[in-house]
Image (cartoon, rainbow, N blue to C red; front, side, top):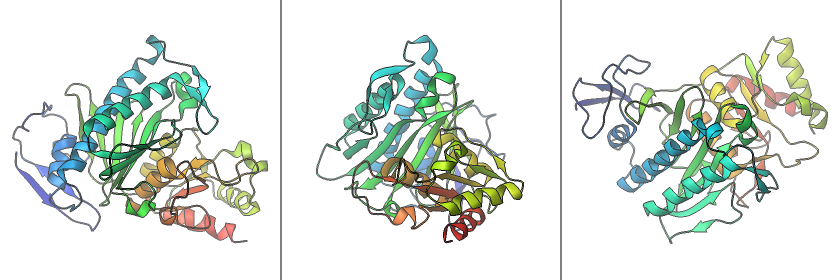
Length: 347
């Protein structure tokens, strides 16, 4: 395989591929990405990206492959959920006091098993377990939400897995993430990821069993026409400025789109532009979304794609975690909308 790497922007790795076979991977030669070039498998992408990303060593490549392998298995369970008696509640609550779904529990077990067995993760944190698992003294740390949007499982709405990777310690600010991403289980299964040099997307090809590079460079539009927030909670919001901002967007003929699955809402925002907001309210005074495995990795992706991630008071990626399951308000999206939102919040 001959791979030519070019770098037309400071934050993107771009690929063109010769029509030669890719060793050890089955690939449909008719499969192309959005730029019309042959789509490359995930592992081949990493091996090439290694040339331009200093921290992308063999251990991190192995770790990322284990995460992707786990999400392939989860995707299979999601597709067959209605046939495997794994829908509905597991009859327990997690550390956050939220009802655990059977598929939540299964996804968590699959990820934990893969990460513990690969030998490259020294610390592992999950939404579904109270304490951090210490595997070794040094290495890579992984924080993940095994199945974001689990309240939508029973009604067949897009859900996903979110992950974040640091070196040696989980309790670092998000700006020090070495990799972050999510897998969305929707009409197609798609992996969106950043290694700190732009954002790329891979679509799962059931025929080859590979995630193939379908979106070589995801750039967030500077301005969109969609806002995403649960307006049913409007009276519970603690900020009058937020209410005025939402009214302003309505006056500007923005469209409301809210799925209730962060992966689905952020995925749309990344591709279409606009703003996603999960604010603090009277019940959740510190916000509801978790910093380590929801807010931080998603903000990393948004910023790498050209957007902004903030709590309304500070940049999310600058927050040093104080607790494994710390919550924060989240305002992320296109620069124009987020900056306009901050203007309203100041008053």
